[in-house]
Length: 288
Ligand SMILES: [Zn+2]
Image 1: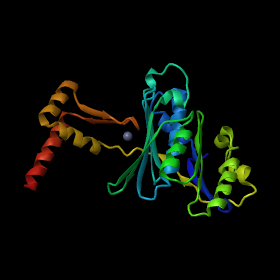
Image 2: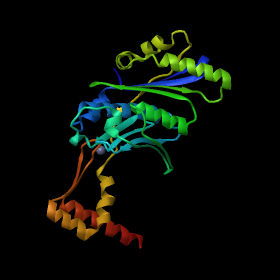
Image 3: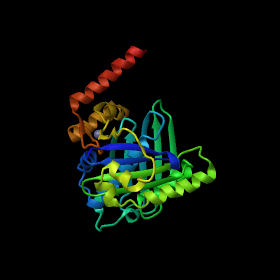
Image 4: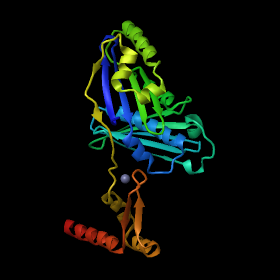
């Protein structure tokens, strides 16, 4: 199964939809940490959900789903951009002792959705964490921010994570649109986790909407990619100042930053650090 995002349209019902399937990317991301099964699956659901949202955003940029609660998992982060690149992580799993679902893992807290558009524009939406599933909180987010009726269904097992999303199209006649929406939602609501994780997109749509006209779009690929780099660590080192940075190198042997998303170690030894400050002072002399 390919990692992909397939959009579809149910024109008679004034509804659009998406099916996200993750396999290789999900496995690569969860392999970056020693996650217990239920945390990996929750992260998989968050990745599938954010992948669906990544293609909805009209601007170029990325969308970040961040759940912060008072439960053992104090942070769950998933990010997607409109190039179909995804990454994510969970914090706090090390102390987890018992198996539990979304509500117990996150506890009470909030879900923050951030859209970082290219060019520095940032939009944020916040909802309280609610319900037994991540999808309950996401539906609350849509109800609050998009005002378009949205149905979200998420599933994950050890190998795959998936998202099934239905959304009412804007601009339809009110009374008719409500009847159509209810119809689409009832049909969509019969999808099971096993079907979503195991069936092809075409088979899922045939199973749910065989009596409807379905327009299927070309699937867009999704891939795990982390855009971290050595260059992005440099400002933090320069911020420390030469004396403090060199003192740290003295104590630790080097300055290293481990990327939590991809596990890559960005390491700066004594020569690297000295060179950074030399470059900076040359650059600032040139400026003046
Ligand atoms: Zn990284």
